[in-house]
Image (cartoon, rainbow, N blue to C red):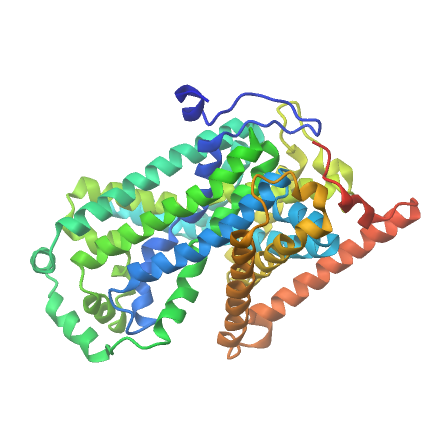
Length: 508
């Protein structure tokens, strides 16, 4: 691949037998993974963690290194399975072929519905971030309108259907959009890292003073609530930050549209994990180099949470134009989550149709090689969750996303272990062989998510039963079981055993 092809995402049109186009190169698929990880969360969670894990202090970069190490082992699982079974649907195809069809569907179904709710919530919150940006640059009337109910409705639905337009256009449009947003996110992050390392705490205190803020006042408040680090602090912090890493798995859903998938998928997963780990370590180290963690804790204890995010904290030491640019990047950071999320939603739907679990017409592709019906249907579902959030605040209470993701990672880990025995012919196609490293990676992918799964149940026990993530997940799994059961009965009436389809890959 020459330089032009790399910059173009390696997007040479190559029709596949299923109607999809293998048009994503290494850069394009890396951008999908990075965009789904480096969203708005790192700007908030990396500093607001101080009052959730009092005592973690400025040790957060070390937590990021550990989290990146765990994510790297999960990435090896994805490289192992993805290079052997490069099909749209990612984890669904891998688990259904590498282990059991029913487990592949149930784990992917719960994740699909949870991601629909998450996408609706993103579209709901993004107008408020855009409104903050417009307020910051002096367009207060625009900012006020964007945060109004009418503005949230119009802008939120506009965001959802703008992403629909991107996806309905072509996989090339998705790739270029993802690449552009990746570059913009890195540009915004660069300024935070640069001004963080370029600023000392005394210089930061002086900058705050010019804005009428006494840093030492809040440092004293934070110091009164602070305590020394304890043995349980690292696991707690890791539990909170773990989900900042694992969004890279959205790349798996593009496996059916990846050019030279055996090589590209083998490289893409570990590369993305290394990139985001380096970014997170630099980001947190830069912020805490300039801003004392006691000051952050003091702000949180004083109820000044609106001031506690990376861009807001370092905005005091940036030129106004740079601060406005970084603020815009934060506003766009939520939006750039949506193209990869749509990739997950629509390609899962497509892969289910290929296996006959849902009607085949749902996976029909248009002349551009995109599953137009799937994309449109999922945009409607996301719009529904957005409206539920806007009108009732219901979707924002859905905590099932993390639980569904953890369960999916566990099933992928199990599939990695049994793959070579269950489907030796397919396992032989992998670019990686089942050696000690792959086996160890699979065990990490099972044990860590299992621990976090249990931890997530325990920390939510104080909530009403219908708001507990485990209960919501069980309800979603039951709904998925009904869908799968209906598909089994329909296949049986046609004289077909649905499970037999999982002995081979979907058509390519």
